Length: 480
Image (tube, rainbow, N blue to C red):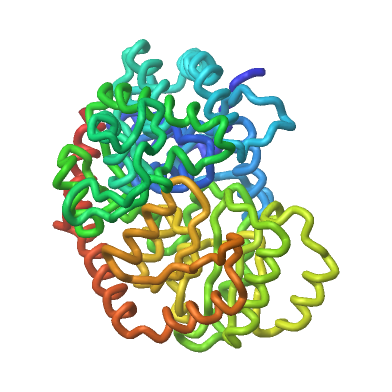
């Protein structure tokens, strides 16, 4: 399988300008973990680097690359361009075409073994093709193996953490948690209790650690091994930045002051720059929101990985119907295998005019819309930061990994939302959903605190703010 580079082919004069800029600032290779929630923030970061005069090669796996290109073409009528300065490249992930890439254990095992050689070959191929030499790798912490490849090739390394700093902090403190008897050497809980890593940080139960909630239990050791390996490899990075802001996680930043927050990240204020979505965005939903009253719509989205069984899907749907409120619900094509098409058609007929279901959307644009009243969310960190930046009250419904920790921040630390409570059978009932939506939307204090955090996040990314200043430090380092 060959490595591929797709150039966006701007006009000749633009290419000449781009090359002169690249010569001035340098060529940066950006590498995300192959999941939507990692591609998006690193693509947003890439756009920001291009704005500061860098040339970026963005490396996806072949499967994700094909999804991104297809979504770009669908959204732009045949073009697959990201704008000047970003080129897309791809390498194999080591899995067969028909293997399940939502199985994180399998995905991590494959890419850790196969991708280093492919990445090395890609870099050699780019140089042979006359591209400027890669000066820096900006790599996802979860792709720590790439830091070794970069060092071997004389490329400097900066690392990017796409989740909360608190999540990284817990990972970095694994030796201490083992020493304290909270975990065994395999990362499994020795004691079933709620702990708090440091004052001001979100409390978390030992059953909800990110590496113990990411797939089949028999494969959890693969993720734990990856984390402990990446903890060591991250020392190869000259700077570590993350998509957070100081006020959101003051306790965690006190614990790890060398990790610099540069968020909440976004590509551009007009939402015009593509951020590497795997599915085409349904732009009809923005016009649909335009026709709704201010703060009236319940927005529901569970990210790119969550899977619901048909019974839970129906309870959620009927819960939205029970609220009597307009709702916009993102339902990916693979969200609920086995769902009755007849049932879904009947449901959509009942809620026609009041509810809109789309397969994907520009979430930042939706959350910035005046019509949205609250966000029913899986609490992925991108969604959490996007909600915070737009002053959104949350109804939390975590699915896996670090989402339980993010829920704890929302409900226990920031107090900008509530969480659903599943029954003893694990199902969130329609009545529970209706009740919690009403509580979140009706709670004046939640709305007020959401506004406070929105203002804080926007101050951080404005000129002179802490995230703004940290981003300047990052740009200055990459410019060396």
